[in-house]
Amino acid sequence: MVEKMKLLHITGPKGDIDRVVKFYLNKYDIHFENAMQSLGNLKNVRPFVETNLYKEAMQRGEELKAYLDGPGEGSLEMRAAQAQVIVDEVYGQIGEVLDRQEKVREKILEIKEWMQEIAPFIGLDFELSKLKDFRFIDYQFGRIRVEDYHKLERYIYKNPYTLFYECNNDSNYVWGVYFVPHTYLMDVKTVYASFHFEEIEVSDKFQETPQQIFTYARQELEKCEQESERLQIQAAEIAMGRKDEILSACRSLESYCRNFDIRKYAACAQAKDGSEEYYILYGWVGRQDADRLEEEIAGDDNIHWEEEEGNSSINPPTKLKNPKILKPFEMFVEMYGLPSYNEMDPTLFIALTYTLMFGIMFGDVGQGACLLTGGILLYRFKRLRLAGIVGFAGAWSVIFGFLYGSFFGFEEVLPAVWMKPMDNIMTTLMLAVGFGAALILIAMALNVINAVRAKDYGRLLFHQSGIAGLICYGFVVLCVLLFVTGHGLPAAAVMGVAVGLPLIAILLKEPLTHLLERKAKIFPEGSKAMFLVEALVEGFDVVLSYATNTISFVRVGAFALSHAGMMGVVMTLAGLEKGSPNWAVVVLGNILVAGLEGLIVGIQVLRLEYYEMFSRFYSGSGKPFVSFNKRNQ
Image (tube, rainbow, N blue to C red):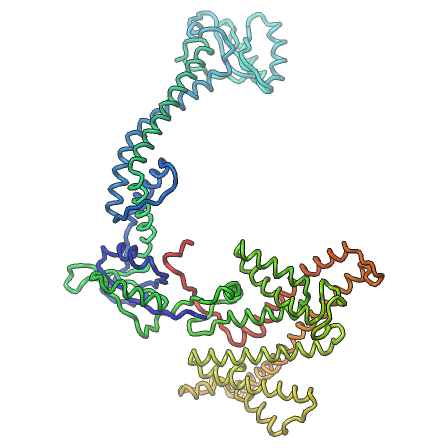
């Protein structure tokens, strides 16, 4: 069913809006409307526009929570201003420690760069400061690929003017330094470049041997890392000393920051004396929640509220309220479209008809039990709504399996409580068509109810699924039933009146509706002859749709036959007639039929629901109810 709503108009001092949202409105499911659209173009009303004042403090609070040990929410209640003061105080105290820690981290990065720079040349047992004292010898650090180094060795062996000292190597490169007399520098440098020698500059600040430099850097790195850890512990101790305050402040700021979006729906208005500004909120609340909210805020002098009556500019949202057993079937309703506020909720209807038709088309005790068990378990542990639907459909499959006497395709294990479809093919198909005609009549009756609720009297009286259509189609169904059961038909005059007059009313639906509503123009614009031609074509389409919609239900019986036929093929392939079936074929055949036919039947039943029934009585034009305090869930 569609939950009944109240539209509340809430106002109060502009600066009090956050308190009201936190202590009152957050407790209830409220669908807020844009107050500016609701109030029209009033001159003294403007949008409530502000910058989020709590966002920066909330972000700082989240940074502080990283220093706390273990989860928590805080036990203190505090306003936004108090929460901001606490966060700023602790953040300032920790900030000094963090500044020192940042300097230590910068030094750690610098030391790691030193180590990375000097590590490849750690095999050079010579003080770097002495290299700078050479007057006639030049040197160059670098690396060369292993395959090029082997070629370079032959050159060095033949050239008396250069020496290459290998410092380190891996599978790809050799690191080292070459020496050359100053007068031969350019020639030798060109040769090294031809062997793809990559020059590496080593900083002038290094004085000792690479090994000594690396050892010293590692010692300094350990000291800096210890200092960084000490400062981290110090920051954590400061935060832990005020853990409850920080967590409480973060919880409060998060709530205020989240609720700040309420301003998107609010409007502001100036008091008549110009002394103060007020916020204005419009929101839909369930009637029971609205009564409790009204009682709660009645004693608060800073809040003024009233119920909006007859505000036709705001359409109520739709909130479905069904028993838990029907909740999974709301998925199919939402797929088609939510009912409008005054429209009947078809959840119960689709739950009954969908599962019933599924069971008729897929009647098998064994396979139905598997669907029932699997669907319920998946819905229980995974909360999949489709699984819940499959579970209920499986229950009807079990029932009709007993009626058909079918158990995993074995037709002789169980006696048929009702009949076996393959032994009564014509009966099965005729019953399916009759069943469809009954469902169409029920859909027409639901359309009549919805038309009464919507006060759409033209649709109620003259629509092809209204009273006129109900009389016309119902009388034809009655005549067919009398003929099939061997009873006499009504007189031709009675049949002509019962069928002809409703058809004429359906053809003249538009002018009759205008006449009923006392409009000046009864017939639409254009020639009356053209209107009559269009009406005749539309009448032919109506009659044809009655026939095709009814015949469409023959698939209900056809799939019942199809299931028996497919399982018969499986049993034949398994060699059942020989008395000793191949159980692997039986198992695989059941899995294949259950999966393939179950999917097809599920789709076909949904098609019958949407096209043959929903289209007759249901518009699905409702807007969803979106609770403000659950909008991010």
